[in-house]
Image (cartoon, rainbow, N blue to C red):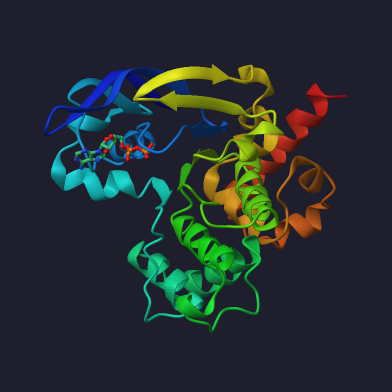
Length: 288
Ligand code: ADP
């Protein structure tokens, strides 16, 4: 899904932020990028979102070569990415609800979709009961959750969180990580940038370690066959998966335990329902 090929980034003043960076992230992976301050983590992300261009080498997102995307298509490209920036970029004069609604409005959703999806996203990040508070009335963890909910507005294939646990206590940090893991379990690829080794040490998760602009280690990459996106649930088309999740069906087990009647209530088109039932039948036959 993402490929960095021999990427180098030199900032003005001959500051080498990254050099010889090559790695690949598959769809459905959960990856930590870890390293001390100044290691080049944010630069790596700025290159992916095309806020910066590499001095050398190139980057692919799916089959798109990121440095060559014409400027006028950049906004369409960026809509595929859900980025949670370090400074969160919440709108201080809007409530939690309005911040999330605003992201959905910009994404061009209908009024009905905006209201349904906002409620659903608040639920995903456990922010129910906080909807009418302003960002300055929230705890650091709650602000982070609003930023994550907002990043999910376009149902992106990739979510990148830059230091999502930066100033949070341990319990809150792990709560945020659990939310990101749940998002990954739906089949969404997740990258978490952190300088904090305690966050990654107990988890058997792919971890790319950067130091002084180079990859020091790349550990824990799972075999493709074991990654989440090979499960039946992750193979379902994204719009269908989203509707299922909004009805509380967010895993293969949940899906298989539904009766045909309850699946009909999800509001899929006839074609979507037919395709889904076929996928389930094929899965059941293959796993008899
Ligand atoms: P990290 O996110 O790991 O802290 P960064 O990617 O922010 O690292 O920075 C990597 C290096 O590039 C640092 O030496 C930093 O000072 C330098 N750097 C980052 N942004 C710029 C910039 N816009 N201009 C010049 N140097 C920069």
